[in-house]
Amino acid sequence: MIDSFEKMLASGQDSALLRFTLGDAYLKEQRPAEAAEHLREAVRQDPQYSAAWKRLGRALAEAGDAAAAMQAYREGIEVAEARGDKQASKEMQVFLRRLERAG
Image 1 (cartoon, rainbow, N blue to C red):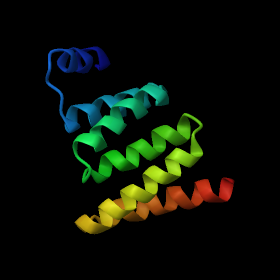
Image 2: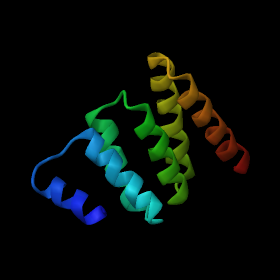
Image 3: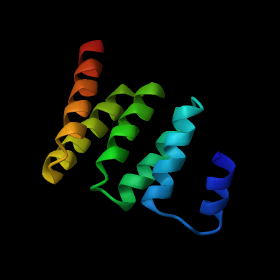
Image 4: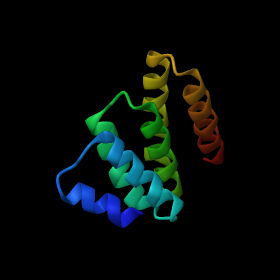
């Protein structure tokens, strides 16, 4: 599945949705650093994409970058609240608190 998405990207079909999908696929393959790369691009292309912020936080946390993960969650919470996406905001708040408690 990743190969076909990477081919789409290589052919110039870049979009926030494609980057989100690639990031999610890399997360499922336990490749968080590669996931974070695509998810960063997804939120760069569409800063209002709350689901991408949530996945980016997860990818960064799994890659061992807790500080960057917390920042991604904070930004994602702001985006989700501005859009009225209460569920995404609540989920990211939980993930953020877990990281903060872990130190």
